[in-house]
Image (cartoon, rainbow, N blue to C red):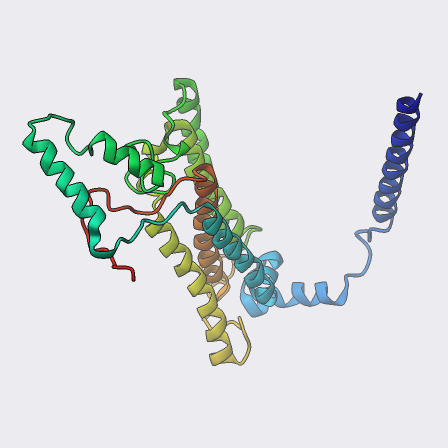
Length: 313
């Protein structure tokens, strides 16, 4: 009896919520301006200034990368902040820095003792006891795969998919690559760097899913992706600062505008768009592959024990 009454109340609450949402949607739809209605002043200003001021007939691009450039900057750097947060959460344990390097010396002594006993092991492998200790301490992963790329020792090193998936992925990759380039290059059409960056990141992700980690290992490298993302972010900041210095307003156009409806039209618009593509594409890849390999260290490691270590007090 109690269960039936509770179910009835839940259904009543759900019905009220659905009816209220439907009423709001209907009222918003009825209140939409018709095609014969006068444009708001801000929309009229954007449409009348796009072509003469920017040589760009696509009002959306002018608003996003021109008159609303500061808002676009904020949205892009929110993504950058999210990427930094994911990196902080997903990074594994840092390598221990041992005073006077006794850990390295101890491992070298074990290797020399093993060779003296005449034992044969596969080249490049540490003794079982030393390797087990490293795995327990989290200094290395329990695998020998990857070369330091993001998630190289995590779950992203899965083998390739079936021949059906691999074959079907080829035209999809081509279409997505062309679509991403189109969204970026043709600035006089709706699009821009943000969606183009997401599309081109999708190309890398589909290639990984279809062909495995080896197909994207040269792209998905932390040093490369982080450097490119910071370069894109720095370029966006530089464009805005140059507008302030040369024209007296942040993100004011300070480049010559080319012929209308060409990739050279729009002044700073295509440059801003391209910089955002770099920042967005690399940020998405860092986030996705870091989450896939979560709880694994994806930074470059000194696998052979070489290099210089800092002594800790």
